[in-house]
Amino acid sequence: MRIMGLDVGDKKTGVALSDPLELTAQGKTVIKFDTVADQIDYIVALVEQYNVDQIVAGLPKNMNGSLGPRAEKVLALIEDLEEIVDIPVITWDERLSTIAAERTLIEADMSRAKRKDVIDKMAAVVILQNYLDSKS
Image (cartoon, rainbow, N blue to C red; front, top):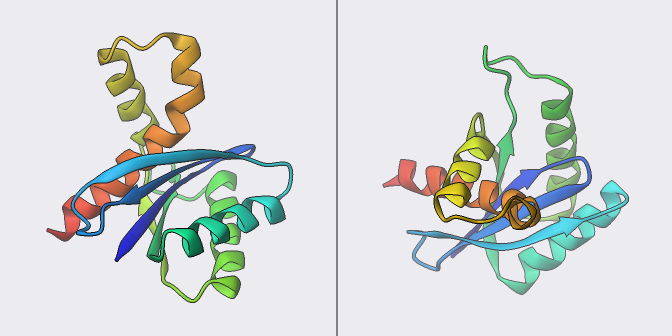
């Protein structure tokens, strides 16, 4: 069984996958897309390719816990995904996940230019790893 983590953005979506034992999250890719349909097609292809049994999508809540426009876009994407894939798609509070990913990359002494290319994938890793840790 594998779980996929998503850090959904307006133009890019970071993707992470768990190991088969669901202990660790590894960054897989960053999906760059022009339309939501393209984004969904790519996610569905990855679900099939890696035999994913569950998707965890980061839900960008405001600091007070309310849902803003970005969260509504994530929830709309989840609705669309659930119509196509026959696996559970759940949300996970992603507040501060990008900040945590940025700190990790800075500690690894990665340049700003390189961080820009991998930050979404790393945020997906943080989201998925937090979810995996909560299960154990």
